[in-house]
Amino acid sequence: MGPNLNEGRYSPGRCARDIYAVVEAYPGDMPAAQREVVPALQRLAREKNLLDMGLPRESNHAVDGSWLYWDSEIGIFTVKFPHDVVVPVHNHGTWEIVGVDEGELDYQSYRRLDDGSREGYAELEVVENRVLGPGDFSVVPLPPHDIHGFRAHKGDMWMIGVVHGDFDEERLYFDPDGRSYVRRHQKAWRRSLDR
Image (cartoon, rainbow, N blue to C red; front, side, top):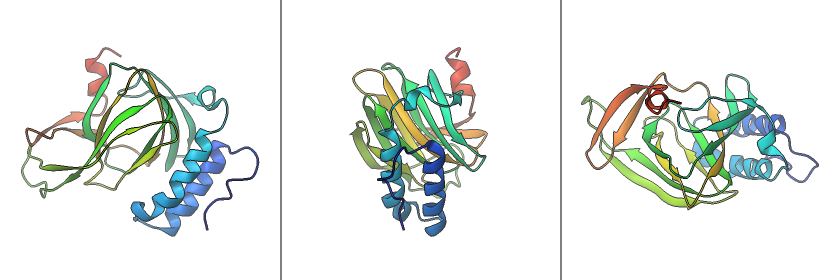
C-alpha cells in the first residue's frame, strides 16, 4: 500500500499525496501510519535543494523556514533552529511529524498521565528522549499526548516537518519537573524574543 519511493524526483506535493493515502488507511492511528509516513519523509529529505524550495513560513521558535506544501489540512515545512534556542515543552492541538534535514536535534516527547481537569497541573511521562540526526523522524501523536520539546544539538539545525490542520491558537507550555503548565497564545513565545 505504501508509496513507491524508487521513481524519479520526489516532490513535496507527491509526498503530501502519499501521506494522505497512509493517513486515510489508518484513521486516527498514527503509530500504525508512521511505519509508512516516515519512509516517505525520509525520501523527501534526500531531495537536493529542499531548503531552497517553498514559500516563507513564520515560526514561533525558529529563525527561518518555508512551506514546501500546504493545503489547510496537511502542511510540509522546513525550519531553521539556531544552536542556542531551546524550544520549551509544549503542545499543538494536533499531530505533527518532526525530523532533521541538516544538523542534530535533542528531542523529547511526552505522554500526559493526568486527566486535564486541574487548571495549571499536568503530570507528564517521557516516552521518547533521543538525538535525531539527518533522516531521523518522530511522530507527535494525537492530543492530549501531542507534547514535545527540543533544542538544536551541537550547532544550527534544519528541521523538516508535517502538521495536520491548524495549530490551536492557545498552547500549553509545560514544566514537566514542576508538574505544571501555562497557557499562552501560540505567537506569544516568538514575541517575547522580539522576533
